[in-house]
Length: 100
Image (cartoon, rainbow, N blue to C red):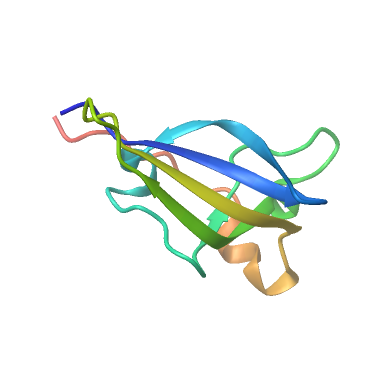
C-alpha cells in the first residue's frame, strides 16, 4: 500500500484552491484531521512574529480511495490569524530530537 496523501484546500467563490504542500498522516501525528480540527499552518509570513501564525479550521473532509492503494484526503479549510488566547500553542516550541 502506498502512503496516504493529504492536501489542504481553501474555498473561495465556489473554487477550491490548494494551500501549501501535500502532507502525510505522519505530518499530523499519525491521525487524519477531521471536521472541526485546527491546523497550525507551518511558517510565518514575512514581517510577522511567531504568534501571528495562520490557523486552518477543517470544515469538510473528502476521502478519495485510489484503485492502486494511493489513498488521498482533501481537507477544505477556512484560514484565520491566530487569536490572542492561542499564543502559547502557536508560539515557538523547542525542537525535539529523536531518541538514540
